[in-house]
Image (cartoon, rainbow, N blue to C red):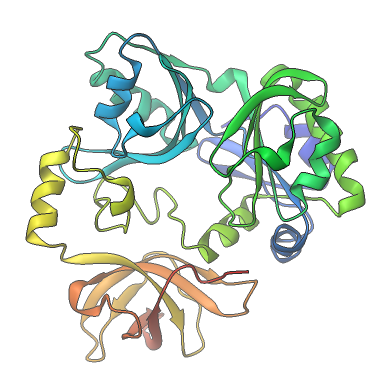
Amino acid sequence: MDTISLHQNHIDNGAKMVPFAGFIMPVSYKGIKAEHLAVRNAVGMFDVSHMGEVLIDGPEALKLVQYITSNDASVLTIGKIQYSCFPTDKGGIVDDLLVYMFAEDQYMLVINASNIEKDIDWINQHNTFDATVTDISDDTALLAIQGPKAIEALQSLTDANLSDIPYYSFVVDTFAGVPGCIISATGYTGAGGFEIYIPDDNVEEVFNAILEAGKPFGLELCGLGARDTLRLEMGYCLYGNDINDTTSSLEAGLGWITKLSKDFVGKDFLVNQKAAGITRKLVGFEMIDKGIPRHDYEILNENGDNIGIVTSGSESISTGKFIGLGYVAKAYMKEGNSVFIDIRGKKVEAKVVKLPFYSK
């Protein structure tokens, strides 16, 4: 297991550390509920330095990005970001990712920690273009500052006007005295805020500066536990749970990042799947009866027949309801349909609901 640069800082701040995606990571500090609510109501900071970053440089950088990703990166302009995925040629997903455009010939891909080696192998396998692929993960730290008070908590640390950075956009500027930081208006919580990419050698000073600047605004340190409950409330997919190499982007409700008007790996499979119609889909559901849905629990119909599988489930801390995501057969996809979760042999009723589970 690898440790991140702030490992000791997290322990000193009371973090409970657990293995995750090949790293020892903070799962919680004061407790998942308190951290979750801090992000929804004020501001929280996550260390997500385990994530991977890959630079694509060269005259045909865009051609490579276009070929390996499902979304249309040609619409990006400098300073803009796009959510996308790497499709397989058999209808699965290698990973989901963010694409950053730095220049006409330079892009950064942000990938999941558990997939870094696999993703880079995948990119190199398909790199028949005049483009260079460089893994900068070890040199890059990443802090996510999320919540409605994120701008107030961070503005004193940079001359960049944070209010002027639109959603899914970024600037490169000095942050907490460290030049060359990427200040990105993104996040996976649905609460607004920023992700700050920092040279790894400088992450401790930036981390401490944010802690100090955020104190008057109620900033709390947050772990992976709250990150998971926050993303689930928004209906966001988690790789390895809700999407993987056996689920297509169309089945996962990611048709909006699947641009069949361009050529890319796996396009033919997805064109055929769209024409034939998907036979299952990832849906959100809310428990009617008492019970907590968990990953890999069976989803049943009224007769007790298996119609799908739970991929993610938890309490929605913001609403007090128990919620989940899961793949269900086509006949049960519609909002309002009753389904049942097999919880330790008991058939517990739920209903299909529209995502997200939580909105302000």
